[in-house]
Image 1 (cartoon, chains in turn green, brown):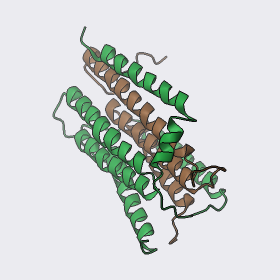
Image 2: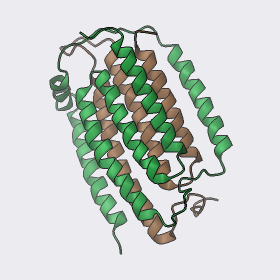
Image 3: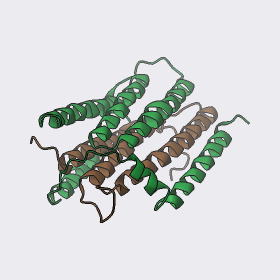
Image 4: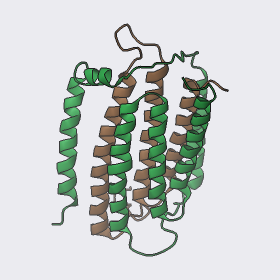
Length: 165
Length: 110
């Protein structure tokens, strides 16, 4: 068992990484830098999942988000960039309204979170992945199969939409 | 503050979701809007997994309630499908209009 200060330390470090990464995605002036900040953010999320003892989801996060989706986004950036303007990640004219809406949502979320009752913080020292697999192919087998059909439909749809005439 | 509980994770999730929402509403490039939406998906996943970790389990064999983790996996799946289709749409729009700036894409605006 690790000393008790390790978990808070890791949590706050990961939180700082996540917030900085997310802010970099939104505020960096070059879109390619924003896309690469997204990788840092995704890996930080995987760290949070490991901290929450969700190792399988952390692995899926790395493979799907930090691997596949990042490559997709980078391809889209490369294929749609036209000018070499340094300001490739501009803001639109709705910044004020957007910040008001976001701040209002944040306040509402905080109000909801603070009303939550106390929670258990029991430590679990067992591998939960087998139980997760049993759930996925037992109780949740129908959504699981529907998700596979959805992925197939998205795959075909993306090819049809993106191909040249 | 030295015990990290559910509230900490939910506040982190709320902060990241807010940043993502602000980005989705205030950016001009469609690809960056998509990236901001991915930020929001991930914020929701933190909340799902944290709730799954900290809420008391239902009677059964797993010591924690894994439904939140299952939902997070489905969110990841749907986000992957969404990203591929959305980027294909962005490419098709770019090919037709030579721009991905949403300020120029007002065809459906009344």
